[in-house]
Image 1 (cartoon, rainbow, N blue to C red):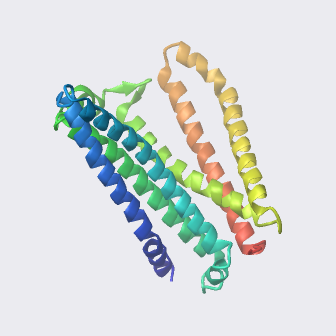
Image 2: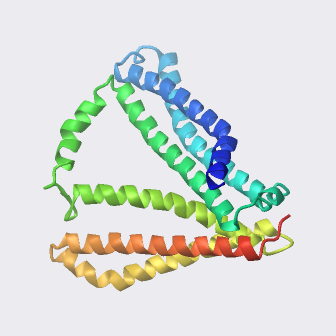
Length: 271
């Protein structure tokens, strides 16, 4: 049954998501052509062509940000509609536990946003590659990647591989954290019969403030390790900060998930 739920969620949201990805591909192609023409000086003697190419690049920047935001807003709207509105009654009458229904939706939303993030990165890389006439990857490999991929290469005292692995992991966890942050805020709002949106916004603000306070307290507590950075031991300081940030992120993930499960299973108040 769980597999069917995941399949249904992907099927129900795929049309809109693929449509936004198609729009992103079109803007990437058009911006790549514009950047290529500018890079080759093909617009230097034509004012209209220069303005058009510049406009396309500006529209691309707007589009890539807007499409990412639209993806997130659409998925969150779909979550609210199928969990807390009239359609939510159908969701909560399915022969599965509230935890399974909630987990399925959070999983699908997080995976879609991960795909959107990866495609956005690839879109920028494709723009640079196409705009440079195929020279970007070659230059990047010669200048950056060759050194970065070596085990001896270090960033603030830690290996390039460790830094890259940590960055990838924390990026995935932050996507999940953002989704759970919104979901937990919505769940708190459902505890009230009136002004649910306002209470959800207040809950989101409160969760954010708590996370900032905890993060700030961690930085103050671990501040003693700053002396190791001043003494030239950057690796110790960086590992303390990175590992501490990872632990705090995991703790907040568990707390937000627990809040969502508790409210959705015991305190649910549908519209």
